Image (cartoon, helix red, strand yellow):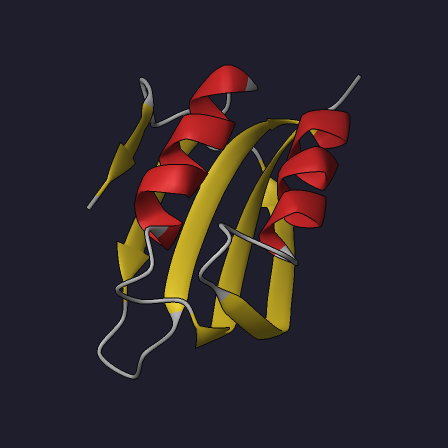
Length: 91
């Protein structure tokens, strides 16, 4: 099973609705490492590293997000794992 690093940009109503905290919880449960952060343009950026099936599960969850979110678009870039993260955190 390959370990990868995925960069996700989440668009829609994703700030001020618990998206980062919910993402941190989901990623931690899946033993993924990386971070989630708000961007100035209103998007949320996620960098997550782990096995591809766990990353896909996180991506599938991100399409809906927490109950108050309204996700309109997700951009994804897939990269080889870098191994630079100890855990998953909100930035």
